[in-house]
Image (cartoon, rainbow, N blue to C red; front, side):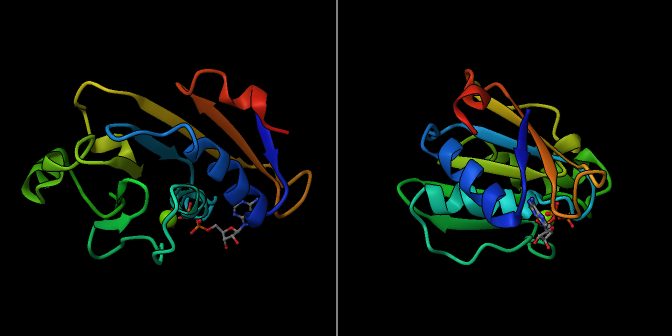
Length: 147
Ligand SMILES: Nc1ncnc2c1ncn2[C@@H]1O[C@H](COP(=O)(O)OP(=O)(O)OP(=O)(O)O)[C@@H](O)[C@H]1O
Ligand SMILES: [Mg+2]
């Protein structure tokens, strides 16, 4: 587990993870509303050498950014079931053509071959309002490289 003490710190941690990402990788971002998934996504995008504006793709469902690889950023919060994932054409992009970053990924049941990294964010308000606990699974010991 990694402790983040600020939004900037979370971006930095994500930026370090980004160094390990390649086309075809999927990063699933888990955690409650407002915990910092989009902040983490922004850090990934900056780490992938893109200065594109990163915001929750609330209405578009998917944003595309261009860095050292293409980046597909999904926010599936407003989708009701997996049919909508199909109807929106998202399966044509998830895990293909670039790095995929997915907020609220639970409706997605199948992924192409390739790596799926899970990032779990949670608040620890007992420490401070800006404290976040971050657990990263599937990235080959990445957590151990963070301080
Ligand atoms: N350590 C931290 N890491 C990340 N964000 C933090 C941290 N401390 C405070 N924040 C603040 O928490 C908020 C996180 O918002 P963000 O939009 O990233 O959440 P989210 O998980 O994407 O929410 P949603 O589920 O609505 O998409 C921002 O206002 C950010 O500044
Ligand atoms: Mg968000």
